Length: 266
Image (cartoon, rainbow, N blue to C red; front, side, top):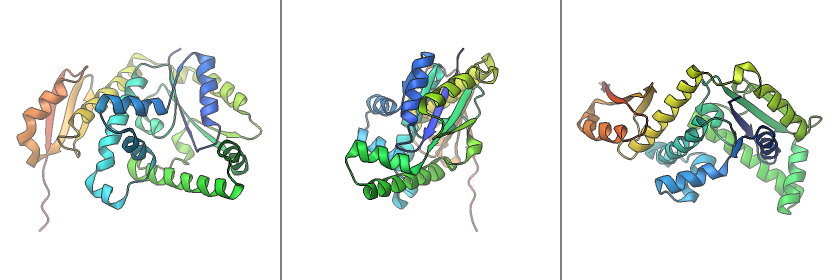
């Protein structure tokens, strides 16, 4: 069996605990923050900036400058590289959206009672119930804003997931069992076609990361290693740079540049 499992969760919702139990039971790799550290090392960016880019909602200035887009491109490239290898459990932001159309991905959402989350945070951080509640409300809102602005989705929307589990009567151990059972279903097993879709997403992400400093507003896609780069007409003078950088990415067979027509307002 080969599959990818993404687990979306709020803080102190036992999502990390569930993910680790699933990975241990299936013998899969379990990743989250380590992807951030890898991205920092590979692309030589400060860890604190990358962490903020994937957790904090963009400020008004960043929405105009696109600062977060750069760090997110690096993060996505490293994350999809892990997904490309299969047999992985990822718990954290964004994973389920980056590979929404890959068939062999089991997308899970873990939710928990606010009272239980408050109790866990109080125990781990040594703070009062009021402080814990305030932090959790703020964190939930920040995650929602980030997801809505950067990914265009509400992380609480159940339609994004194949399985939503409420940790209350169902324990973290029960949740892990249910996820392992679902992952064994035929729908979530990799096929040559679904693996090709994953490979193309990973290649496109790596190319975009390679080009992001040259021009952050380009769109990149891949079809069996043939990469299409969509850019504005005014950027065509950089065509040779785009082609050389893209062809240096492993798995790229050819590069096509498609120029958008600039729309001039009267």
